[in-house]
Each structure stands twice: as structure tokens, then as C-alpha cells.
Image (cartoon, rainbow, N blue to C red; front, side, top):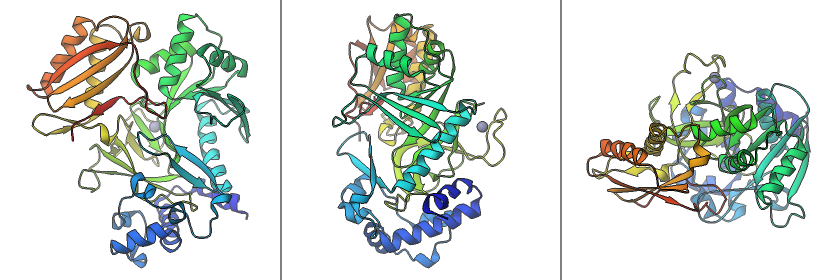
Length: 433
Ligand SMILES: [Zn+2]
């Protein structure tokens, strides 16, 4: 069997014993062949013969993007790999230098195959697929703002966010997508524009949001404008597709066990209890070129013991709460208690609903950002034309006070929100250590 065949077989590996076998192999190889892991695991007292699988992952130190960036590329790659023979993907991290993830072509093919299969499944199992990635990051070296790639599932068309909104909409319409995908913030801007121009002829089978948090208001707007189902993928360049939204329960996701082992750790680095929110740490099961083992993504989620009753995905699925922020986004109360960004985001949503804004989100408040300046002040910046309505302010203030009586808030409208360098919008920024 050739390399691609061997790797594609991994997609069938779902049972714990198979994952343990794959993990054992991967960890052994990483320890022997990747200088970074050999050095750091050795310093932590790791003994390769003691490692039997997922239950022993705790033996290995957590790896972060910063740790890996501090190494030269040869230290991160397996010894037999020549950097010139890999393909790379750049992570769109929140700050700092770009981080390149290297793979060989078979590993990339596997990653794309798994993503394509999920998209095919979600879009009604019909071929060929025309997947349009709207608001894409297209390298400045690219000759065209629109790129087309052929895959076993059909075509993937990337439309650059550097194009004007009108040109982007025209290109999407011309492509006749069966699947429209992109970051929620990019899709939202397009949907608002289409809504204002009464454009109603772009009809994909499904819209797939990925790369950022999908808020309920944006989900509703996209469903309205594109008149189709909207679903949500949890993805990162380090893995590809990490988890997908349960078709029956939007608040949960199922883990892509073909591609990764996912752990949720508490602030002490220990496994969080089921249902308890913690930091997402992943191990890539298919990348032997640049192994990512116990790699902290910094996102917040919780593993669930079982899926809710409405989920019909079967007994073998691994279920997590849909990630709602990053560990960097933790809000610190005046008594030093830490709370999830999810809580503040929910308060904004509740305040919008109290104002009756749920269904006219794009005409009133187009977006917002939450900034914690000090332990006693939280600001909310609304991308909106007028001042935030009184009832919204009152409901949000009440919610903030219920978290801690000394916590204050300030709400204001702005004409622009700064995106991250990557083009993503960061929902919550905390300046409190
Ligand atoms: Zn399900």
C-alpha cells in the first residue's frame, strides 16, 4: 500500500485501541526523530517505553506555539524531512510572528480528504461539490484574487477579501457554490451587503462558518440571506478540521477523531471534569513531518460525558461544547475570580434580545467587541450608527453587576472595529493579567 493509502486508512481509526496504537507510533517517532521533542521530553523525565496511548499523554509536557517558534525549523521537523519538500500552511494566530505548519503532500491530502468528506456529508451527499471560500486570505504573491483548486470532491474556489464587496458577491454568484464557507465576520459583511442590495439569487446548499465564534445573530442572518442551513466547524491550521457542529444540537460539536486527540485541561494543566470549561489541547494524529503533540490551541471548551438527547449521531461520537473564546480572553473580576468569555458574550446577546434586536441585527448593531481595561471596567464597542439603545445598556449593566457589584461597564458605538492582523475579529480583549 502506498503512503496515501496508509494515511487514508487512518480515517477509519475510531476505536480507542486504534487511536492508542497510532499515538504510540507517533510519539515514538517524534521522540526519536524530532530534536525539539527529544530534548524537552527528555528534560521532563519521559521514558518512551512507558508510553502506551491516550491515558499516558499526561506524561508529556504541553507544547505551545511560542515554544515551537523559539526553535529553528530543523528542530521542529522530523530528521528525515527536507524543508524544501514540504507544503506549509500559515496559522492566523492572534498575535506575533506567523507560524508555519509543515506537512508532506500525503498528509495534506488526508487533511483535505477528511474536510471534504464532512462537507459532502453536511451538504446532502451529492457530488460534485463547488466549495466557495469567501473573504479568503490569498497571498500577495498570487497573480489572481480568485483561485480555483480541483479535489476529489469537486472544486474549491478562494475569493480574496482584498476584492471589493460587490466584486466578491459577483464572483460568488458566478461560481454557483454548493457550499459557501468562510469566517463568520467575512460572511456576515457579505450577507449584510446582499441584504441591503436585495440580492437573493445566491443559494448554496449549506453555509459553513469556521475560524471564529459563530454568534446566534450571525447564524440567523446567514440562514435568512442565503435561505439554507448554516453549520459551524471548529478548525485550526495546526490540525485542519477539529470538530463539527452536531446537526441536531448547535451548542455542541463532535470531535474529528480521525485527525486528532483532544484534551481539555484546567488552569493547573490537569484534565477538566466533564462539563467543566478548560483550555483545548490537541495532538495531531496524521502529521509525522512536523508532529504537534499536546499542542495548546488556547481555545476554551468542555468535554461532555454524553451528547444531549436530541443528538442522533450515534454512540461513538466524542462531544464538546462549542468553543466560545480563548484562554487569553478570560475576564478577571474585582475579586480575582476568572470567568469565561462565554459569560460576557452571552450577556451582550441577552441585552440585544431584550431590546428586540435578535432579528434585525445587521441593521442596528453590525458587530461588537468587548474590552476589559481594568479589573473593574468592561467596555463594549458596538459597530453601529446610533448610540446603543437605553434598554440594551440597562440590561447589560444589570448582567455585569450580577457578576460582581464593583464591576462597571461602558457601552459606546464606533464606526469601525479593528480586526486582528490575520483579518479575524477578536471578540474579547482583556488587558488584565
Ligand atoms: Zn450529534
